[in-house]
Every structure is written in structure tokens, then in C-alpha cells.
Amino acid sequence: MNLFEIMEQSTPTLPDPYKEMGVEELEQRVQHVKHHMGSRLFLPGHHYQKEEVIQFADVRGDSLKLAQLSASQHEAEAIVFLGVHFMAETADILTREDQHVYLPDMRAGCSMADMANINQTEKAWTKLMEKFDDTILPLTYVNSTAAIKAFVGKHGGATVTSSNAAGMIKWAFTQKERILFLPDQHLGRNTAYDLGIPLEQMAVWDPILEELIHEVPLEDVKVILWKGHCSVHENFTVTNVHQVREDYPDMKIIVHPECSREVVALSDEAGSTNYIIKAIENAPPGSAWAIGTEMNLVNRIIQEHPEQHIISLNPRMCPCLTMNRIDLPHLAWSLESIADGQPQNLIKVKPEMALDAKKALDRMLERP
Image 1 (cartoon, one colour):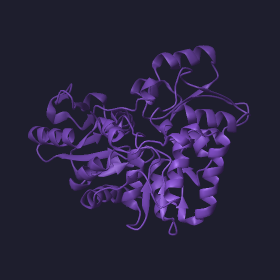
Image 2: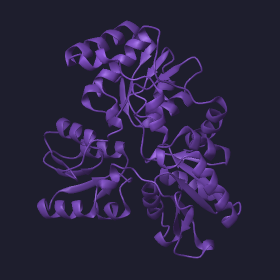
Image 3: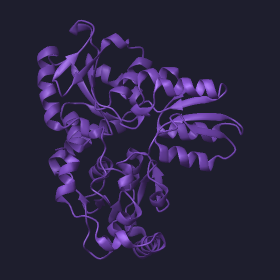
Image 4: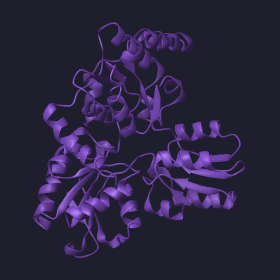
């Protein structure tokens, strides 16, 4: 049983009345609480949230930006995070003690973050130390649990985002001879490859088999990739790329670096969520794009840019299922519970864990 299955069994569930309310009533209830609480309430919304929820966000962005913005809301007493669990954890780590972070539905997890738990990571670290001695610096994608961020912070490492991964890997190599990159192998592989590290010098740690998969002698391994992935972005395939090339020869393909190395290599551009959004915003009218990222965001981009021909790289792609756990009924319930003084689903990272996790975040934030 994973973390989110445990949460589903042990946390309060949505009361029946909210399941029976119509959209108009739910929207009115959300608006009422927002108006009543004013600046004491802050709703950060991730780009992948669906329209029924993101319409109420005070700001939209990626996970780290939203956590930082949450910390900057000095009058906010309650932060209701429209995203997934690890994002709310990061917001709790960065905000003040007297600010409280809530997640409307505790089932809103992240399959990627769930692929590296602390027990697996500590076991892996022990075995890797036996193989490589003290020559490894751990890095973790911000799409990871607070426990993994804390582990990395405790061992001198840092967090990375899809925007700054290249700079952070460069920094890591000034500290140690090799790196362990958690939990997304694709972002790690794509970034390291772009920095000139050959694929054969990248090994993969399999946390299930507890073994290192490598092609070259151990002394030649430079990057150890955790065998994890984003369940959404791994569904974009080489076949999808070839189909777009055949159907739309003049269409540009832009993908997120959480996609596989093969897909990124065949695409025209690859970059973070913000990079993708900006690329479309700056593209001339009449341009054509196939986008390889989460479907809620792709649909939003399509709606916001009717002057361009935009499609999903995978026409059968579904939205991120865990992101979609945050829906209008759960949002209304969360806000009214806070307004009534009986808040649900508080996200609280233990102080000692938060301290080490913040070290990892600060090492990233201190880099230019």
C-alpha cells in the first residue's frame, strides 16, 4: 500500500451534500468564502488543474513558483493549494509557522513522487556508497516528497526544477564526481545528455530490484538515474512523433523534458511548462504546434490561442488523474471548512524534516 492509498483510508471524505450540489451553487459557495476571507485566504493553482478549479486560483504557475508566492502572502492565514500533495508540502516548508496549508483532496498525489520513498532511497544510498564511496551528490526534482527533499538536503544535495536542472547539475559536478538524480529518470537523462554526458555513462538504479543497471565500468559512471517517471509524459511516444510528422509536415513539436529521451530527441523543442507556454505565446499567428504535456494545460493553451493550430502530441492523452482529484466539490468543502473553523486536510511537514528539506531548496534558490 502506498502513501496515497493509506491517506485515502485515513482522511476525511467529501460529505454527501457536496456531491449533490449543482455547479452554480458550488461556484457561489467558493466565491462567498473567497470574498469573506479576502487576503486571509490564498489559492495558488497549478497549470495542470482543470478549468472548474483553476478559474478560482489567485495565481497560476508551476509548483515551486506557487510555493514561493504562497510564502510571500504575508496576510494569508490559510493557503489552499490547487495541486498535488508534494506541492502543498513545499508550500508548508517555505511558509511561516502561523500560516496553514491545505489540500482539498488528500488523494491528489503524484505517481512520480510516489516512485521514490524514503526507505527505498536510504537502502539505495547505502548500496551506492559501497560501490562508489563518498563520490555522489544527490539531486532531487522538486516533484518529490518532503522526505526525499530532506534526505537530499541532509546529504549536501539540492532540489532542481525542469527550468534550472542544467545549472544545478553543473553545480553538482563542482561538488562531487557523480550525481544521483531522483525521482524522474527522463528529466535527469535529457538534461545530462544536453550537457554533453554520454548516455552510456548514465546508470539506472532500480529500487524494486535494488540493483544498478550500467553499461560501462563503475568508475566511468557519472550519472545515476532513479528508475522513476511521470505517468503522463511517458505516454508520449516515438509513434506519436512519427504520426504528427506524417499528418502535419510543417507542424513543430514541443515537449516537456519529462518525456523519454527518444521523444525529446525527435522533437523540435523541449522545455519546462513555462517554456512551453511562452513559446506558444511568442509564436506568430498561423503557426502549428503539437504539444507533449498534460492535457488540461494543452486544452487551455488551445483555447487561449485560436490564432494558431495546436494539438496534443498524443490525441488519446488523458489529463493527469491525480491532479484531477481536486474538483469543485472538494474545493467548496475545503474553503467552507476553513471558514467554519473546522479545516480539513492540513498539510504539515515535521519540523526536523522541513529543516533538512529547506536546505535542499535553499541550495537551489541560492544559485544564480
